[in-house]
Length: 259
Ligand code: WAQ
Ligand code: MG
Image 1 (spheres, protein in one colour):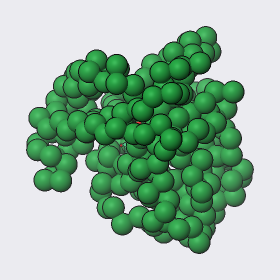
Image 2: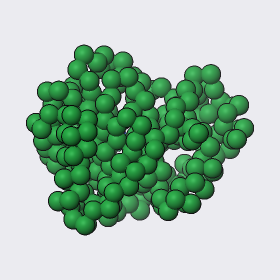
Image 3: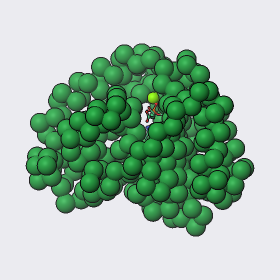
Image 4: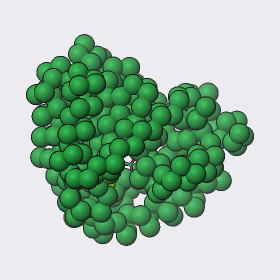
């Protein structure tokens, strides 16, 4: 049990970095991150995030913003970690077929919605720093955030040390999956979200995932090495209160627990 994390106030730390000026003035998104930390962890993690922004495969940031807010312990919700299912595919085509099977045959999203999700990710070209919310029935875009997207924030593992150990033991290596598991768990815990499709925008990271129900389906290959394409789409049930959903995703602090 992580006593420091479960008994004290925590701090939300958010980083966003761009090249060619700030995002809001047309800079190209390079990297972002969000975590919930103890006071003791803040300084070292801020340093790590600066380093990450300055040595990213997408480019070198010339704008870095780090925001830190104190989060009262009583406002933090606990949510469960998703189960992980991994599929190794031999080609990108096989990867895309797997995505289609999950989204269309399992979640029953209409074909046109799956198509719209890929279009959204492909046309964003790795420029978005957040996710697009799509109506799971019509494929219409529900958020009005354009190229920015909805950025999920204020989240972390309840027991990061245990999780690191557990992930290592299961040969799930690196920061990408660690961060994606936290994000995907928060996203599926939101009222109205049926599923997610994610593809990293990092040119050297080709593994992506589809999540729905209680499961994170990681798919080993969804794009070419070197491709800047990437993004996230959240599939939202029709009639969902989109404003409340945005507030939950962006603002509600959550800690992800593993059993
Ligand atoms: N909230 C909403 N959307 C986000 C967020 C966020 N906090 N962070 C990233 N995105 C969107 C944004 O459009 C990015 O362009 C896109 O997702 C990809 O972000 O099991 O690394 O941080 O090994 O590049 C998947 C791990 C890794 C698969 C995904 O995403 C595995 C990844 P990246
Ligand atoms: Mg990235």
